[in-house]
Amino acid sequence: MKALVFERSGIDNLKLDDVQIPEVGSHDVRIKVKMTGVNPIDYFVVNALPVKPLPHIPGAEVYGEVDAVGDHVKGVKTGDRVIVYNRIFDGICDMCLSSMEMLCRNGGIMSVITNGGYAEYVTVPEKNVFKVPDYMSEELASSIPVAALTAYHALKTAEVKATDTVVVFGASGNTGQFAVQFAKRMGATVIAVSKKGWLKDFGADYVIGYDNMKEEVSRITNGKMASVVVNSVGSSVWDSSLQTLGLNSRLVFFGGITGASVNLDLSRIYSSHAKLIGTTGGNRLEITEILNKCEDCKVKVWKVYPLEQGQEALKALFDPSRDGRILLKI
Image 1 (cartoon, rainbow, N blue to C red):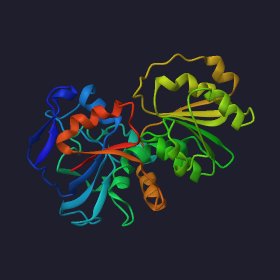
Image 2: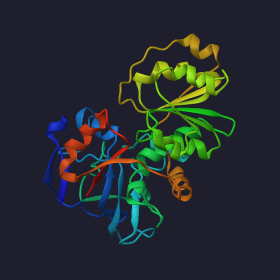
Image 3: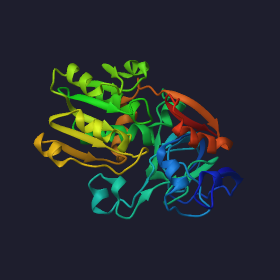
């Protein structure tokens, strides 16, 4: 089969190559990959993170059709449209037993501690496979395992409710566009910090730019500022995130494509009784919740690349003109 493979870190080392089709164990499902998301985690896998095995196939967000199943697989059959929950977990540690599979003490992220889905086929345990509703497009389905799940879990952890005003930084990005949609579904007033007017069609009540951002949030909230701030971008908007926090508020953050190191003014946090909440990924129950309630969810796609243009797709994450998701079509 064809796959994007690298033996040494560095995006220029990522090459399309012929590799062996993965075997299917008794509890495994082999998936013919149809489409995969391009996410910051994939960029970091190729460029920086320690991975195994080597040579390595990246790709953390997978949608496809079931190609073959193991002898003990009962939940899916050949031809089913499926997505892959991308956390490797044992199911028996204290985190797993608390429905926190993404924090499994003996696990990790598929595409980091295992090969990923930038390939024609991928094999995963049946417990990681979820059937996709008939109504769901392949673009939306391929955005559920990382982009949608990460945003949904973050908002649930922040306990967003109808009385909240939620400010979303990076609102037009992979996770941001889903944070806007889910926050609106939770009843909140949503302020998207972006130049993209299409976010109003995704549920944003207000779309504001970075210029005079603090003043705009103050005007919209009558001086109360935000009760929840979502930062999916990293250090570049950290100070702005803190500036928009109101009293007894929550700042939930994940990812760091613009950097992970920040200066923290402790007095700003404790004097406003604010909570800082770091989140990562989500659990399997949340995957099912998204699949059951996302009939009218949307995804803004900017570009779709073929598998052989994987290098270009990863580099495009940093294109200043990027307007929505980047996907690989297999």
